[in-house]
Length: 263
Image (cartoon, rainbow, N blue to C red; front, side, top):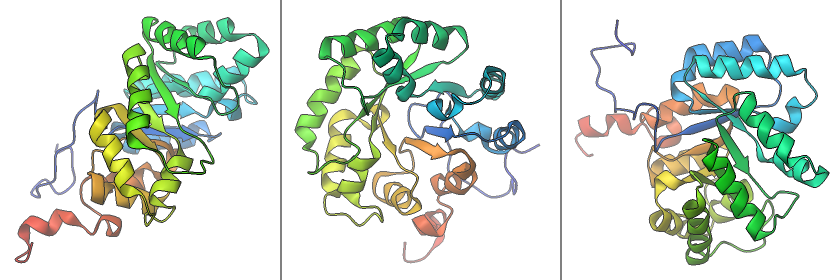
């Protein structure tokens, strides 16, 4: 049985898991087990990380969240612990319990963010090293939610490189930074700065945080279909994944380009 419908057609290849580029991180703020089972059944092969959106899932029974973690692993998807829980645990003095809980209950990747809590630099670097030494993939969320000026690629790359050297697997570029650079509609004034940052750091080490179709289309057209996408709403994978294959108006159907006379 062919892995694709229409086996007589040729489609672009997709890097198999574990991927280094073209990664998709989805978040779920409280979908039912039936909904998540359906998502994993249909597009689980295209999902690399699953985040039961951490603070939202705090209001649900543990068994509910733990079952979702089991389901993700059954589909070769890595459970991802969001950074807000770590921030709150640090603020409340329960960081050690949080780190042990993450490892004990099956999360395989964890995020270190500074949305509300700013960590002293030595604490942040120690956290990265400890999580990496524990066998977790460490993601660091870089940037501000409401930046007032566009990032300087050289400065951002230097800071990001320090975290990578400390053990960070992927750095997530905060959505606010993306919005300021390329605009919510993909027509912003500073796209060259984002492209420069990717050139300096490397696409395998960076992930953009976006849920906007216009932005995702821009990334696919301008920076390639192997862009790493983070915090995509769980039920949007079936809509976004075809764009990686050159299928969809948002990317102008480049799958046809090799066969058109003027291409």
